[in-house]
Length: 356
Ligand code: PMV
Ligand code: MG
Image (cartoon, rainbow, N blue to C red; front, side, top):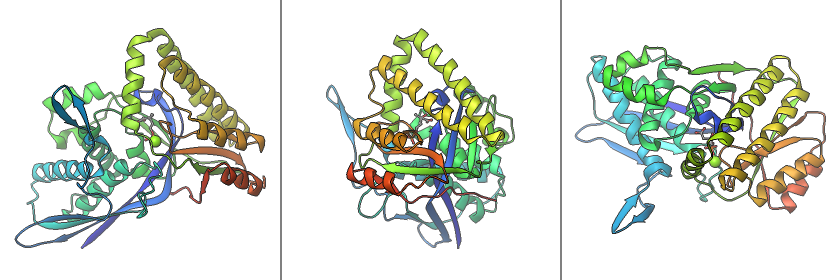
Protein backbone atom coordinates (compact mmCIF):
# COMPACT_ATOMS: atom_id res chain seq x y z
CA UNK A 1 0.00 0.00 0.00
CA UNK A 2 1.25 3.52 -0.75
CA UNK A 3 0.09 6.78 0.80
CA UNK A 4 0.64 10.31 -0.49
CA UNK A 5 -0.60 13.63 0.75
CA UNK A 6 -0.74 17.08 -0.79
CA UNK A 7 -1.45 20.41 0.94
CA UNK A 8 -4.06 23.04 0.16
CA UNK A 9 -3.06 26.62 -0.61
CA UNK A 10 -3.93 30.27 -0.30
CA UNK A 11 -3.18 33.01 -2.78
CA UNK A 12 -1.50 35.97 -1.12
CA UNK A 13 -1.26 38.39 -4.07
CA UNK A 14 -1.35 38.61 -7.85
CA UNK A 15 -4.74 36.99 -8.38
CA UNK A 16 -6.42 37.13 -11.79
CA UNK A 17 -3.31 38.59 -13.46
CA UNK A 18 -1.52 35.28 -12.80
CA UNK A 19 -3.98 33.55 -15.13
CA UNK A 20 -2.15 35.29 -17.99
CA UNK A 21 1.12 33.80 -19.28
CA UNK A 22 4.15 34.94 -17.30
CA UNK A 23 2.42 37.21 -14.78
CA UNK A 24 3.48 36.61 -11.19
CA UNK A 25 1.56 35.76 -8.02
CA UNK A 26 2.48 34.85 -4.47
CA UNK A 27 0.96 31.63 -3.21
CA UNK A 28 1.49 29.66 -0.03
CA UNK A 29 0.84 26.01 0.94
CA UNK A 30 -1.24 25.51 4.10
CA UNK A 31 -1.23 22.57 6.50
CA UNK A 32 -4.53 21.03 5.42
CA UNK A 33 -4.16 17.95 3.28
CA UNK A 34 -5.72 15.58 0.83
CA UNK A 35 -4.46 12.04 1.43
CA UNK A 36 -4.60 9.30 -1.18
CA UNK A 37 -3.82 5.64 -0.57
CA UNK A 38 -3.49 3.02 -3.28
CA UNK A 39 -3.39 -0.73 -2.78
CA UNK A 40 -3.49 -3.61 -5.26
CA UNK A 41 -6.87 -5.16 -5.93
CA UNK A 42 -8.14 -8.30 -7.66
CA UNK A 43 -11.03 -8.62 -10.14
CA UNK A 44 -12.00 -4.94 -10.08
CA UNK A 45 -10.55 -1.61 -9.06
CA UNK A 46 -12.33 1.00 -6.95
CA UNK A 47 -12.23 4.66 -6.01
CA UNK A 48 -13.47 5.42 -2.54
CA UNK A 49 -13.90 8.88 -1.14
CA UNK A 50 -15.66 10.13 1.96
CA UNK A 51 -15.97 13.67 0.73
CA UNK A 52 -15.96 13.48 -3.03
CA UNK A 53 -18.86 11.68 -4.53
CA UNK A 54 -20.91 11.90 -7.61
CA UNK A 55 -24.04 12.31 -5.47
CA UNK A 56 -24.93 15.84 -6.49
CA UNK A 57 -24.37 17.53 -9.81
CA UNK A 58 -24.59 21.20 -10.71
CA UNK A 59 -26.05 22.15 -14.06
CA UNK A 60 -27.17 25.19 -15.97
CA UNK A 61 -29.79 25.47 -18.68
CA UNK A 62 -28.73 26.20 -22.22
CA UNK A 63 -32.01 26.35 -24.15
CA UNK A 64 -33.40 22.85 -23.97
CA UNK A 65 -30.13 21.27 -22.85
CA UNK A 66 -28.87 20.60 -19.35
CA UNK A 67 -25.21 21.63 -19.19
CA UNK A 68 -23.17 20.10 -16.39
CA UNK A 69 -20.37 22.05 -14.79
CA UNK A 70 -17.82 19.49 -13.56
CA UNK A 71 -15.23 22.10 -12.68
CA UNK A 72 -16.12 22.37 -9.01
CA UNK A 73 -16.51 18.64 -8.51
CA UNK A 74 -13.27 17.14 -7.13
CA UNK A 75 -14.28 13.68 -8.32
CA UNK A 76 -13.51 14.66 -11.89
CA UNK A 77 -10.01 15.79 -10.88
CA UNK A 78 -9.36 12.35 -9.39
CA UNK A 79 -10.43 10.69 -12.64
CA UNK A 80 -8.37 13.08 -14.75
CA UNK A 81 -5.28 12.54 -12.56
CA UNK A 82 -5.66 8.76 -12.90
CA UNK A 83 -6.12 8.97 -16.68
CA UNK A 84 -3.02 11.14 -17.22
CA UNK A 85 -0.74 9.27 -14.81
CA UNK A 86 -1.66 5.95 -16.41
CA UNK A 87 -1.03 7.40 -19.86
CA UNK A 88 2.43 8.37 -18.63
CA UNK A 89 2.97 4.91 -17.09
CA UNK A 90 2.16 3.28 -20.45
CA UNK A 91 4.68 5.56 -22.20
CA UNK A 92 7.27 4.59 -19.57
CA UNK A 93 6.62 0.91 -20.32
CA UNK A 94 5.13 0.23 -16.88
CA UNK A 95 2.30 -2.36 -16.89
CA UNK A 96 -1.04 -1.11 -15.50
CA UNK A 97 -2.72 -2.78 -12.55
CA UNK A 98 -6.00 -2.99 -10.68
CA UNK A 99 -6.14 -1.07 -7.41
CA UNK A 100 -8.27 0.41 -4.73
CA UNK A 101 -7.69 4.16 -4.51
CA UNK A 102 -8.93 5.89 -1.38
CA UNK A 103 -9.18 9.65 -0.94
CA UNK A 104 -9.53 11.54 2.31
CA UNK A 105 -9.53 15.31 2.67
CA UNK A 106 -9.11 17.82 5.51
CA UNK A 107 -10.02 20.53 3.06
CA UNK A 108 -13.67 19.63 2.96
CA UNK A 109 -14.68 18.92 6.53
CA UNK A 110 -17.37 16.39 7.39
CA UNK A 111 -19.78 19.12 8.43
CA UNK A 112 -19.70 20.36 4.85
CA UNK A 113 -17.53 23.45 5.47
CA UNK A 114 -15.49 24.35 2.43
CA UNK A 115 -12.74 26.80 3.22
CA UNK A 116 -11.67 27.44 -0.36
CA UNK A 117 -8.14 26.14 0.15
CA UNK A 118 -8.11 24.61 -3.30
CA UNK A 119 -9.26 21.04 -2.87
CA UNK A 120 -9.29 20.40 -6.63
CA UNK A 121 -5.55 21.12 -6.94
CA UNK A 122 -4.64 19.19 -3.79
CA UNK A 123 -6.69 16.15 -4.81
CA UNK A 124 -5.10 16.18 -8.26
CA UNK A 125 -1.56 16.38 -6.85
CA UNK A 126 -2.20 13.76 -4.15
CA UNK A 127 -3.63 11.31 -6.71
CA UNK A 128 -0.72 11.79 -9.12
CA UNK A 129 1.78 11.46 -6.25
CA UNK A 130 0.20 8.25 -4.95
CA UNK A 131 0.12 6.62 -8.40
CA UNK A 132 3.66 7.85 -9.06
CA UNK A 133 4.73 5.76 -6.08
CA UNK A 134 2.41 2.85 -6.77
CA UNK A 135 3.74 2.45 -10.32
CA UNK A 136 7.32 3.46 -9.29
CA UNK A 137 7.45 6.13 -12.00
CA UNK A 138 10.02 8.23 -10.12
CA UNK A 139 8.69 11.56 -11.32
CA UNK A 140 10.60 14.59 -10.05
CA UNK A 141 8.67 17.48 -8.44
CA UNK A 142 8.91 19.39 -11.74
CA UNK A 143 7.43 16.45 -13.66
CA UNK A 144 4.78 15.95 -11.03
CA UNK A 145 3.81 19.61 -11.33
CA UNK A 146 3.53 19.34 -15.11
CA UNK A 147 1.47 16.16 -15.12
CA UNK A 148 -0.88 17.44 -12.40
CA UNK A 149 -1.20 20.80 -14.19
CA UNK A 150 -2.34 19.06 -17.38
CA UNK A 151 -4.77 16.85 -15.45
CA UNK A 152 -6.21 19.91 -13.70
CA UNK A 153 -6.45 21.97 -16.87
CA UNK A 154 -8.32 19.12 -18.61
CA UNK A 155 -11.17 19.56 -16.12
CA UNK A 156 -11.14 23.26 -15.26
CA UNK A 157 -10.11 24.63 -18.65
CA UNK A 158 -8.95 27.93 -17.14
CA UNK A 159 -6.87 29.13 -14.20
CA UNK A 160 -3.18 29.71 -13.55
CA UNK A 161 -2.25 26.33 -12.00
CA UNK A 162 -0.45 28.21 -9.22
CA UNK A 163 -2.37 26.11 -6.71
CA UNK A 164 -0.82 22.97 -8.23
CA UNK A 165 2.65 24.49 -7.74
CA UNK A 166 1.90 25.30 -4.08
CA UNK A 167 0.63 21.78 -3.53
CA UNK A 168 3.74 20.18 -5.10
CA UNK A 169 6.46 22.45 -3.68
CA UNK A 170 4.99 23.67 -0.36
CA UNK A 171 6.00 26.84 1.49
CA UNK A 172 5.90 30.34 -0.02
CA UNK A 173 6.22 30.62 -3.79
CA UNK A 174 6.50 33.24 -6.48
CA UNK A 175 4.66 31.62 -9.38
CA UNK A 176 4.43 32.61 -13.04
CA UNK A 177 2.18 30.59 -15.26
CA UNK A 178 3.15 28.90 -18.51
CA UNK A 179 1.59 29.63 -21.88
CA UNK A 180 -1.60 27.55 -22.00
CA UNK A 181 -2.04 27.93 -25.76
CA UNK A 182 1.52 26.68 -26.25
CA UNK A 183 0.64 23.63 -24.14
CA UNK A 184 -2.52 22.95 -26.13
CA UNK A 185 -0.50 22.95 -29.38
CA UNK A 186 2.45 21.07 -27.90
CA UNK A 187 0.14 18.29 -26.73
CA UNK A 188 -0.59 17.52 -30.39
CA UNK A 189 3.12 17.39 -31.22
CA UNK A 190 4.75 15.61 -28.31
CA UNK A 191 4.08 12.59 -26.13
CA UNK A 192 3.30 13.16 -22.47
CA UNK A 193 6.70 11.75 -21.60
CA UNK A 194 8.40 14.28 -23.87
CA UNK A 195 6.28 17.12 -22.48
CA UNK A 196 7.27 16.34 -18.91
CA UNK A 197 10.94 16.58 -19.88
CA UNK A 198 10.61 19.90 -21.72
CA UNK A 199 11.03 23.44 -20.48
CA UNK A 200 7.61 25.06 -20.53
CA UNK A 201 7.67 28.61 -21.90
CA UNK A 202 7.36 31.30 -19.21
CA UNK A 203 6.70 28.89 -16.35
CA UNK A 204 8.65 30.01 -13.31
CA UNK A 205 8.39 28.67 -9.79
CA UNK A 206 10.59 30.36 -7.23
CA UNK A 207 10.73 29.38 -3.55
CA UNK A 208 10.59 32.30 -1.12
CA UNK A 209 11.49 32.61 2.54
CA UNK A 210 9.21 34.67 4.74
CA UNK A 211 10.80 37.29 7.00
CA UNK A 212 11.05 36.17 10.64
CA UNK A 213 8.69 38.92 11.82
CA UNK A 214 5.94 37.96 9.36
CA UNK A 215 2.74 36.41 10.64
CA UNK A 216 -0.03 35.17 8.37
CA UNK A 217 -3.61 35.24 9.65
CA UNK A 218 -6.50 33.65 7.83
CA UNK A 219 -10.18 34.49 8.25
CA UNK A 220 -13.06 32.58 6.73
CA UNK A 221 -16.28 34.26 5.61
CA UNK A 222 -18.32 31.08 5.72
CA UNK A 223 -19.57 31.42 2.18
CA UNK A 224 -18.15 29.37 -0.67
CA UNK A 225 -17.24 30.89 -4.04
CA UNK A 226 -16.69 29.35 -7.47
CA UNK A 227 -13.25 30.34 -8.74
CA UNK A 228 -13.82 28.96 -12.23
CA UNK A 229 -17.00 30.99 -12.68
CA UNK A 230 -15.41 34.19 -11.35
CA UNK A 231 -12.43 33.72 -13.68
CA UNK A 232 -14.83 33.22 -16.61
CA UNK A 233 -16.58 36.49 -15.79
CA UNK A 234 -13.33 38.42 -15.59
CA UNK A 235 -12.28 36.97 -18.98
CA UNK A 236 -15.47 38.37 -20.49
CA UNK A 237 -14.60 41.80 -19.07
CA UNK A 238 -11.08 41.42 -20.45
CA UNK A 239 -12.43 41.35 -24.01
CA UNK A 240 -14.73 44.31 -23.41
CA UNK A 241 -12.33 46.57 -21.48
CA UNK A 242 -9.03 45.93 -23.20
CA UNK A 243 -7.00 48.96 -22.23
CA UNK A 244 -8.05 48.92 -18.56
CA UNK A 245 -7.25 45.23 -18.47
CA UNK A 246 -3.79 45.76 -20.02
CA UNK A 247 -3.10 48.46 -17.42
CA UNK A 248 -4.28 46.11 -14.68
CA UNK A 249 -1.78 43.45 -15.82
CA UNK A 250 1.08 45.95 -15.90
CA UNK A 251 0.31 47.30 -12.46
CA UNK A 252 -0.12 43.83 -11.00
CA UNK A 253 3.27 42.77 -12.32
CA UNK A 254 5.11 45.69 -10.78
CA UNK A 255 3.31 45.34 -7.43
CA UNK A 256 4.10 41.62 -7.21
CA UNK A 257 7.73 42.21 -8.25
CA UNK A 258 7.95 44.62 -5.29
CA UNK A 259 6.51 42.01 -2.95
CA UNK A 260 9.05 39.45 -4.20
CA UNK A 261 11.82 41.99 -3.55
CA UNK A 262 10.32 42.46 -0.08
CA UNK A 263 10.71 38.73 0.56
CA UNK A 264 14.29 38.76 -0.70
CA UNK A 265 15.16 41.77 1.47
CA UNK A 266 13.30 40.29 4.48
CA UNK A 267 11.29 43.49 4.57
CA UNK A 268 7.90 43.04 6.18
CA UNK A 269 7.09 46.71 5.49
CA UNK A 270 7.62 46.25 1.75
CA UNK A 271 5.51 43.10 1.65
CA UNK A 272 2.69 44.82 3.53
CA UNK A 273 2.83 47.84 1.26
CA UNK A 274 2.51 45.48 -1.73
CA UNK A 275 -0.51 43.72 -0.22
CA UNK A 276 -2.31 47.05 0.23
CA UNK A 277 -1.47 48.10 -3.33
CA UNK A 278 -2.58 44.77 -4.79
CA UNK A 279 -5.89 44.91 -2.93
CA UNK A 280 -6.60 48.40 -4.27
CA UNK A 281 -5.69 47.25 -7.78
CA UNK A 282 -7.95 44.20 -7.57
CA UNK A 283 -10.82 46.37 -6.40
CA UNK A 284 -10.27 48.47 -9.54
CA UNK A 285 -10.48 45.28 -11.62
CA UNK A 286 -13.74 44.45 -9.81
CA UNK A 287 -15.10 47.93 -10.66
CA UNK A 288 -14.37 47.87 -14.36
CA UNK A 289 -15.29 44.24 -14.82
CA UNK A 290 -18.51 44.47 -12.80
CA UNK A 291 -17.62 41.31 -10.87
CA UNK A 292 -18.09 41.40 -7.09
CA UNK A 293 -14.71 40.21 -5.85
CA UNK A 294 -14.43 41.79 -2.39
CA UNK A 295 -17.80 40.96 -0.83
CA UNK A 296 -19.11 42.81 2.27
CA UNK A 297 -17.78 40.17 4.74
CA UNK A 298 -14.37 40.21 3.02
CA UNK A 299 -14.28 43.99 3.29
CA UNK A 300 -15.16 43.83 6.98
CA UNK A 301 -12.43 41.23 7.51
CA UNK A 302 -9.92 43.56 5.86
CA UNK A 303 -11.02 46.73 7.66
CA UNK A 304 -10.78 45.10 11.09
CA UNK A 305 -7.29 43.78 10.32
CA UNK A 306 -6.19 47.18 9.01
CA UNK A 307 -7.23 48.78 12.33
CA UNK A 308 -4.57 46.61 13.98
CA UNK A 309 -1.83 47.51 11.52
CA UNK A 310 -2.19 44.44 9.33
CA UNK A 311 -2.11 44.38 5.54
CA UNK A 312 -5.18 42.46 4.48
CA UNK A 313 -7.01 41.36 1.37
CA UNK A 314 -9.26 38.60 0.13
CA UNK A 315 -7.41 35.50 -1.00
CA UNK A 316 -7.79 33.98 -4.46
CA UNK A 317 -10.78 34.75 -6.63
CA UNK A 318 -12.72 36.38 -3.79
CA UNK A 319 -16.51 36.33 -3.87
CA UNK A 320 -16.38 34.60 -0.45
CA UNK A 321 -13.99 32.00 0.98
CA UNK A 322 -11.01 33.42 2.91
CA UNK A 323 -9.14 36.64 3.51
CA UNK A 324 -5.49 36.88 4.54
CA UNK A 325 -3.61 39.29 6.79
CA UNK A 326 0.11 39.93 6.91
CA UNK A 327 1.01 41.36 10.28
CA UNK A 328 4.03 41.81 12.56
CA UNK A 329 4.60 38.80 14.85
CA UNK A 330 4.95 41.18 17.81
CA UNK A 331 1.38 42.46 17.43
CA UNK A 332 -1.09 41.07 19.94
CA UNK A 333 -3.85 39.81 17.68
CA UNK A 334 -6.34 38.57 20.29
CA UNK A 335 -8.54 41.70 20.03
CA UNK A 336 -8.42 41.48 16.23
CA UNK A 337 -9.59 37.87 16.32
CA UNK A 338 -12.38 38.78 18.78
CA UNK A 339 -13.62 41.49 16.47
CA UNK A 340 -13.54 39.07 13.54
CA UNK A 341 -15.62 36.62 15.49
CA UNK A 342 -18.16 39.29 16.41
CA UNK A 343 -18.39 40.09 12.70
CA UNK A 344 -18.97 36.41 11.81
CA UNK A 345 -15.49 35.94 10.43
CA UNK A 346 -14.01 32.66 11.62
CA UNK A 347 -10.26 32.75 12.31
CA UNK A 348 -8.69 29.58 10.89
CA UNK A 349 -5.81 28.07 12.85
CA UNK A 350 -3.74 27.25 9.79
CA UNK A 351 0.01 27.16 9.39
CA UNK A 352 2.25 27.38 6.37
CA UNK A 353 3.29 23.91 5.22
CA UNK A 354 6.96 23.69 4.28
CA UNK A 355 8.25 20.66 2.37
CA UNK A 356 11.94 20.11 2.90
O1 PMV B 1 -10.08 31.25 -5.30
P1 PMV B 1 -8.81 30.49 -5.42
O2 PMV B 1 -8.11 30.35 -4.08
O3 PMV B 1 -8.97 29.19 -6.11
O4 PMV B 1 -7.77 31.34 -6.27
C1 PMV B 1 -7.99 31.75 -7.60
C2 PMV B 1 -6.90 32.67 -8.08
C3 PMV B 1 -7.11 33.23 -9.49
O5 PMV B 1 -5.94 33.96 -9.83
C4 PMV B 1 -8.30 34.18 -9.54
C5 PMV B 1 -7.33 32.12 -10.51
C6 PMV B 1 -6.12 31.24 -10.76
O6 PMV B 1 -6.30 30.13 -11.26
O7 PMV B 1 -4.98 31.67 -10.48
MG1 MG C 1 -11.64 30.88 -3.77
